[in-house]
Length: 296
Image 1: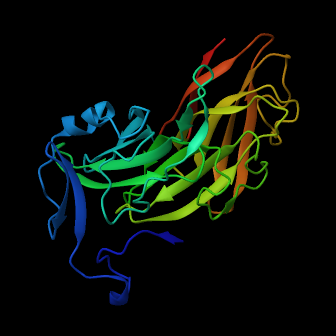
Image 2: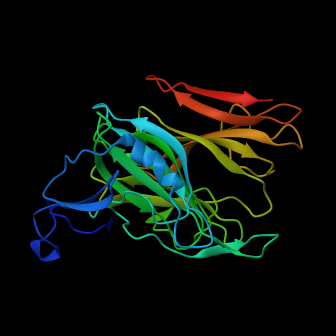
């Protein structure tokens, strides 16, 4: 289990820090430390304006939001990507330091391109307080997309990454590991307070395939649902699948259900016809029925 900076959370020894919580909250005046306070007023607009901040480099700062989810109390969780240290990261977060690096060069100017990394932010139901914020990163490019929040407030996030050193606790059985050449994905569960990761399991696809995850959802039984597209001829399907083999040479869709308790693919099927079929959205109802949107 990975832990971030100790900030007085129960279960951690006093030798790891002081019991008085300390947070760095972003406000319209900038980033400021707030000791012993969790209810500082923070304009939600300030989070959006971060994207316009210029950093002391040849590259402008940018931020891209990939998804928003809400928990049962109305708190909102934003996830996405950014290329500089401009997020309202709190001192108690899982990853508090932005990993500065270059990931390639501009094709025309040959200037170095900074790596981008994922982030997650939890905002109070009234939209005025940053409860916690963390980076999600390795040494390469990392982009986060929201999945959902469970009953205990833990946040599930899918991170597309080229970082072979992205923090992970294991790999998904039945799927290839992250590719050193093409990257892969990490599915992680962030604790409700944002201070540590409960699990972070990685997976990829064969280098010979054009495969990608387009949507993820939480099933009512606690499993994780994935939907995407592939041109691979050996995509793993399970017995009794709706479609066990690709019907065309074009891109086809897939859906698979992963059980985090057993680290096994419970169900997996292809979805497609004689032409190109792209899965773009995924949802499930309270009975576990799966709904997908397909562009065909």
